Length: 273
Length: 228
Image (cartoon, chains in turn green, cyan):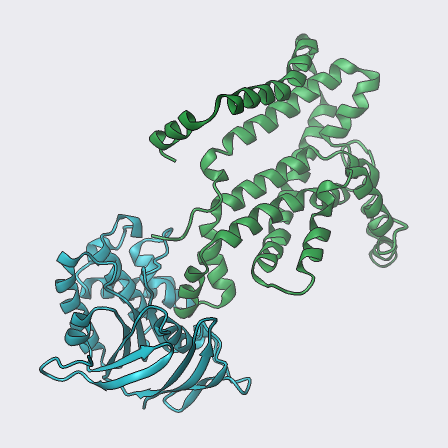
């Protein structure tokens, strides 16, 4: 959007809307102000530098980035199917795939535990046949994170695909591209913004994941104790440390979200000329 | 060697009844009012719209038959199409747009780019090669779209209002250019247009569609006589 256009939109905005918007911003900021006020700033560097924090941070980064990548690989074909094939029961399938977004994460964790956990319906076979367990494994963390993060990517990408002009894909098909090639080379680049936004949102959700992870994968230092879990555990024993870890998570998330600029959040780039 | 059309496509407001043949070297103009089924006709030939009845055959090979599983996917048809608004891929340069079909058909990058470059040169727009469609004029976009369709060396070329988006001042020159390109193409061309000057300058034969039916099918004579 050009500056002139954004200026015009700004001028048209009613005063009431501006007041409510300002109140909302304050509402969002208050908890952070409270946290900043109580943070033991002198301990910050010590907490950031100790090995348990580094382990938890490294684990969180590793698993959340993996979860975001897995979400792209699973979520894009799902979004494509939901956006383009009007099959019977599509709404039910979509609701099932998005339900983890509205569930309390701990419910997601319990569901995963009873399906993919060591004694779960499917998990027991993974253990019997391959000796593989998600519990107390970093892959368990990734699965829990994907479970809660995937809907953010699917929703964002499906919305963009619905708005994308299907004629560009037809043009690609007429030139000799099979549907997969046309999607990869023409449709997907045309919704690049939404794909990036969806991936970053999925990453952010995975990075902050707590309930499903601790329920399903457990809490084992270095393997499943992510930064969120470490923060929660510190709250009882050492609240100052919990505040320092919270500051660290806020800083990381804030930097990533600030880098998700407006233009990446526009619905589609459009493949049009 | 011909394109044989004998099919129906049902739409909400009309049913297209296509019953005619085209032979190589022939440029057939399809004219008619909006909603007559002109674009549907081209899309059906390209395989982008399913037939409800009948069949499409090219050089004896069935491309599509409604009553059976005979259906050649759009990407397997030897048919090139220039779409209305050109539909150039905005994230690719002109050269990449022209090379797209060759790459999609498995051509190596270097060879695809070499052939795309040669085509752009033959159309006097070699300078446009590194530019994105957004930086091109309407006329340049039209030529890139034509080059993109010709790059795959189709046996049938479908043109959907290729000059409609061109400003009147440039249209005359581009029409002459298009006419020359199509003459050297020498295969089957179907040209949808609203402009009678396009028909007189470019086409050998004119088909008038109205509400999905062919109401006129005849040659464009030397004196430019056309159906009233």
